Length: 192
Image 1 (cartoon, one colour):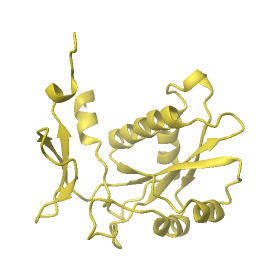
Image 2: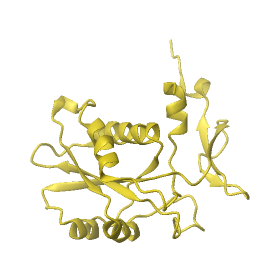
Image 3: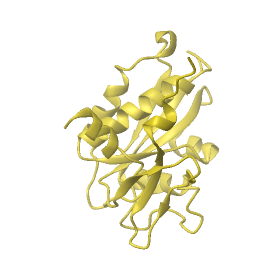
């Protein structure tokens, strides 16, 4: 697959085929990619928890918020839920700044998931205290995000938008998820 195709196929999927598991070995392969990416000052403060056991996956699901722009949708239903998660942590004993590293690692892992035939979504609207309790995460780790993983069950398309269009994603009457994206000529600027 060409890299451009991989990037455009890597969408934020929120509905999955719950009958297709993402194994712990597959999650390990995906997390391993984060070991090779750039890190500010090469501190490498990110740590990860693989959640693949069905009972833990089910317990984690209600602690996540899904698709804020879709006000009438409370998230994936039974049969559409992720089959694994990666909980991204920031090790505060190494650094208290994780912004750049977490974005690079999350995107790289999702590209790896896509290349492996899976899909995912970065979820940052979380019930952090309940997640900390569920997974017994020590206070010395910041809970940064959760990557939901599974076999995509939905179609997500990119719509080119104009400067006056809304950035809000939406689902059409056929359930196709549309994601407006700015055009190259609108983001590639020249001031000189």
